Amino acid sequence: MVLTDSEQLAFAVAEARTGRAEGGIPIGAALIVDGAVLAVGRNRRVQQASAIRHGETDCLENAGRLPASVYARATMVTTLSPCDMCTGAILLYKIPRVIIGENTTFSGGEDYLRSRGVDVVVLDDADCVQLMSDFIREEPVLWNEDIGEEGAAA
Amino acid sequence: MVLTDSEQLAFAVAEARTGRAEGGIPIGAALIVDGAVLAVGRNRRVQQASAIRHGETDCLENAGRLPASVYARATMVTTLSPCDMCTGAILLYKIPRVIIGENTTFSGGEDYLRSRGVDVVVLDDADCVQLMSDFIREEPVLWNEDIGEEGAAA
Image (cartoon, rainbow over all chains, first blue to last red; front, side):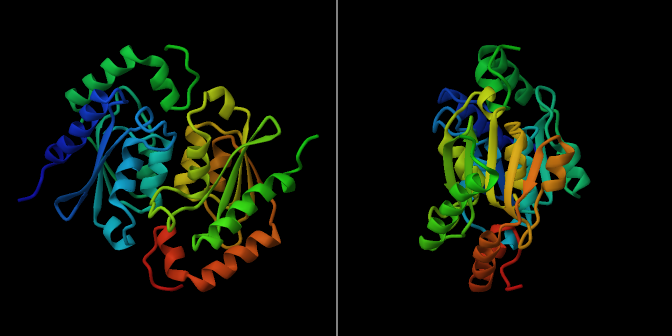
C-alpha cells in the first residue's frame, strides 16, 4: 500500500509535536524510502543547544550514513518550508522529492530546489500552519534565532 | 594584530590534519569573529558516523547557539570549497565572508554564495590541495559518499 503525501506528512507532524512538548521548536521531518519511514527527526536547537539540528538535518543524521542510491529513492518530508541549510542538505544528497507541510509562516529554498530539479510539493496543511503560528506568537525570539535573524520580536 | 587570510586558514588546516589522523576526511573549518577564533571544526563522517558533520557544520555546532549579530561579524574559513549543505548553512546564518583553501579538488557553492552577497575568497593553497588529493586517491569511495555520489571509485 502506497502512502499518500498527507500520510507521509503525518510522521513529520508527530515529530514536530514531540519537539514542542520538549520545549523545542515544532518542526519535524521524515525520510521515506521505498514506501517506508527510514528515519524521522525534529528541530533540536533547544534540546541539544544545536545550531545545525533542524528538522531535516536531524532526520538525515538519524538516518545515518547511506549510499547515494538510497537517497536517490528518497522523499524528504518536512512540516515547514526548508531553510537554506536544509535546502542545501537535500541538494547535497540529491534527494529527488520534497513534501512540505506549509510555507505560509516561513518560505525557504523551494524555488532553488526546483531550479536544481527537485520535485517540490506544498500541502498547505492547516495543522502545520497552526503549530508554527502558535509557536512564533509564543516564542518570537527563539524563532528568529532559528532562522538567523536578530532576536527582537517581530 | 589582524590575522591575514592565510593565518586564518591555518586553523582550518590544523583541523583537517587532525581529522585525517583520526581516519576521517581531511576537511577543516574555523569561525573567526572580531579577529579571534570563536570555534573550529572538522568533517566527522567517519568519527561520528555522521551525515551532517562536515567541516563547516561541525564548526557551527561547536560554536553553539549564537545571536545573529555575532554571525554578522564572522568569517567562515574552510579548507575546501563548501558543498551545497555548508553553503546553505553559511547563508542561513548570514555569514558575510568565506575564506576557502582550495577549489581544485572539489568546487561547491561559491557562485551561489556570491549571488547572495557573500564575499568569497579562494586562496588556492597548495597544502590544502595536497591533503585532499592524497585523500581522494587513498579513499575514493569514502570521498564519493561525502559528496553524495555513488561509491565507485572515480
